[in-house]
Length: 269
Image (cartoon, rainbow, N blue to C red; front, top):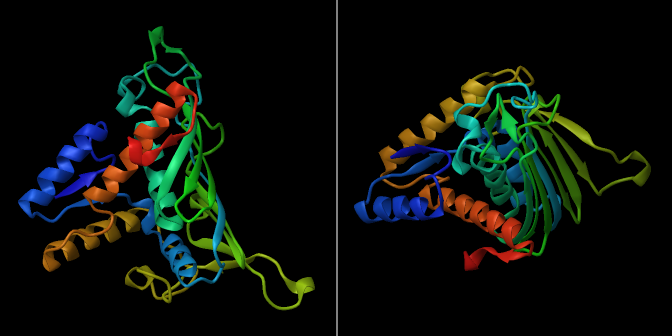
């Protein structure tokens, strides 16, 4: 079973879907496609290999401007919590934060509806949010999610700082990551731009020439390949329904934090 993100309209529904999938024994996966770029897969390898040391801080965002124009009429995207910014864009970057830095243990969030009406119709969901978080490994995190970020078209981006280096990535330049490593002559250190190529995960299936680049459609193809592989192996594939449920758990904790104006432990939600 392949489910597009988010898994369920809310945490209760996603938990029910996870329980049904696991009890039935069916193969299950959630369609988080952006994390599948060769660049982000390379970033995960670099982190897992310890090349930037222990992670100390992650700053990530998913910013777009498709609703930045307040004169645009309201539609399904502006009605219902699950269709808002926290239901639409937030799952992608939360999934990225979990994939890159590990489990999130606590959050404090501020969520806002900037344009209260559109075409005279009240907007019933959020436009943007800011989330501070703590990871299980002790690292600090900051997430910013917005559908009204003027000028941003596909601002799925992150910066990860470690004790031995750091990584920068921006989906608007999806075929490159920037890597800084604390090694060698200090006067020669700096961020190195690494263009993805056949030596990086899944790139070779699309092109043998480094630097030629993959596109959005290739992320979807990789996602489909992963699901077909899961069917062949008879086992759930990352990100599974459980991973999708954990994303919804953090979203629920963020809403609760916003309402209570306090830090929330994710495990208590």
